[in-house]
Length: 197
Image (tube, rainbow, N blue to C red):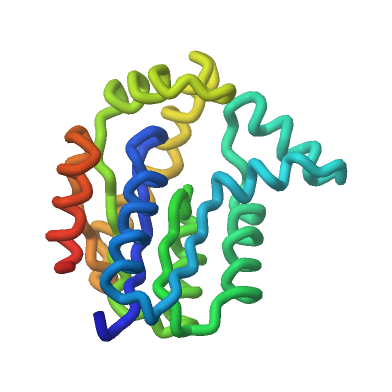
């Protein structure tokens, strides 16, 4: 693997972004151990952020508790901070859960150009709304209650879906439409083939 991998995972809640990100990182580690990977997972960043006591953190917790979507400036601040403080330019870059809107996708595009990451891969883990809802119910996390599930699925359709279309039609990206309604192993194999690994 001569050039670093840049892969942006996007998909409905419960589509397996975190699982497939981790599999890809492990694969890269096994085949190109000389290159580090910077993994940017905005969900965990937000979950950590809301543990604090500042005014901003309390507002963010209220938004998360009602299953809402955090504003773009906070998401950009999280992953932007990670890039500015941790990225040396040599690492593989794996994004999980960003972007969550068209605006955030456009801001992330400026970051990709700033760091000269050519033709980043967009791994769209494609699942239906119904499949996603069933998966979230099975998962049974604290934020996977019916009202929160419905809210998160609605903001995906309203806010994230336009970003998916943006990437699908953008010539600067390698858009990979992955059928994620398969076994974890089958999804991983399809993803590796699509990435040419």
